[in-house]
Length: 194
Figure (tube, one colour):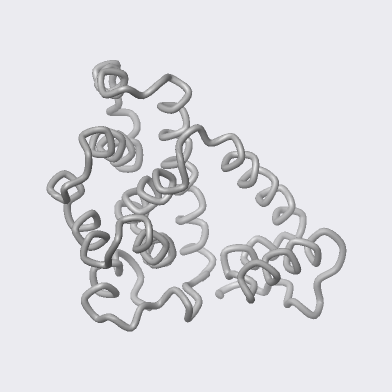
């Protein structure tokens, strides 16, 4: 971490509560949370906003992770790629399947609906000003509702914001997210080397 942040033993109030909840869930406090405490007022705001986005997300956890992986690739964010790549192993069935999606989701054997979703997320991440009504129409054709399209855009744009912030302040992946498989780790390394 490049900035001075609040250590677990120094946390008080809402920051301490958020730290404790994360430690209870994961066994550790992620740099992704701690980095917001360079300005302590931000962690509670970020946490509430993130939780509300996820709570109202109209697609599944698998879709959230797929969108995030593709957005992280194009930000590029190795941290987020490592975290969501690891989580997707169970969703997709193997490391090889995750690697295939990371390399080229269009040729990874995903259903057409997933490919359309990820193509849109990729466009939002690379240059959202290039999104056109035709992109939205294509999503509707494969069965997405407007609420789901909104959520795809929100998930991709949210990842752009947080991933860039994490890199800007030096937040990096915890050991649990750094895979021992060289091929997997190399493929998931899309930005800063860890």
